[in-house]
Image (cartoon, protein in one colour):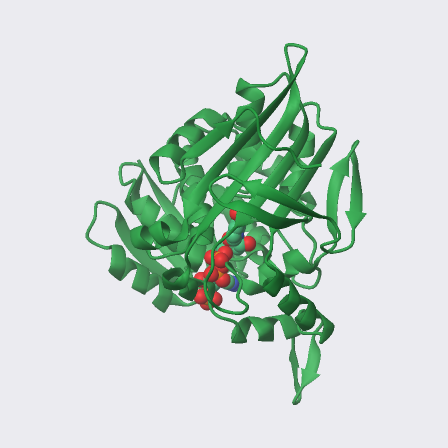
Length: 399
Ligand code: NDP
């Protein structure tokens, strides 16, 4: 049905590419392009021979002209950005110049400030609309499936949703004293930033990890979780009718937090460049280089993830509670595609988002967050491609 150019060949891209190959009627042809071409070639070698035709290319996604040249050569119907959030705008520029649809899983961040907001990408709305192309923002799990869950809850269960708590639990154990489950630089920028949530239309800021709760996660059990800022809060507060408060919590074990605090205290998580032996280095980028590669965690990680949303709102004048979540098993993911569940839960929705655009099930020129589309075909594909969802009408609530 179409051609996808996938940019990036890391943990998330690897899962997305496996899933494209499991869906060859939609993904007839893919090109894997990244900074390090050998990683693209390794993926091609592993997956070649099926119905999806695979090619590879080297590209520096910080360079718009290089991207445009590659798009003009391969002529994709959609570009799936699975590089890093720093590349979002250059890839969007290239898509605009070539009039090709765009999908990503994380909002743009400038390299020199850890700031997660949509304003830079939303600024492209009119230009995408005029060009007749769609940018689908945030098609991972969170953001991504959390937005689809919200749209589904709104469509099928509520007249208005007043409270959303997004709960992201990773109960996986990789056996290392400290490692991150996706790109360490992006992960540490996210968790060491101040926390925030939206209440009555305003952002309320907290110190990092200031708000802690304990939650009894289905199929996992009790875990400590902490309130974080997360990008989908910004779009969901605008797109879901009736929101009074929306929060995001993520689980962390004590060992992870102690290591992180120590690294912070000695300055290793800083993104301010320092002089080191006559060279400028960014401490966080150096830290990334010495930490385990998230891709290497796959064979070692045991346990499950549980990510979902608890909604409280009104239906026919009555208060209603609803919890939608997915449970994913690290070892099963590894068996299926050679990656742990954090990459899996992001790579599957990235493939589905691209499939929505390729099949024309979603077609809305402009720049849109995922909850702005019809959730039903996406929810069907989650069940079909390895992320089945579960629901509860009487969940434990977070105070
Ligand atoms: P990785 O670090 O494993 O992979 C990133 C890939 O992008 C690497 O192949 C890297 O190349 C490539 N890359 C980086 N910079 C460039 C560049 N300038 N030009 C071309 N390629 C480049 O990251 P992950 O796979 O863990 O994460 C990918 C994305 O997914 C991130 O944006 C992350 O924020 C997002 N994410 C979203 C989640 C969600 O639920 N929404 C959850 C988890 C992640 P090289 O091999 O040379 O380093």
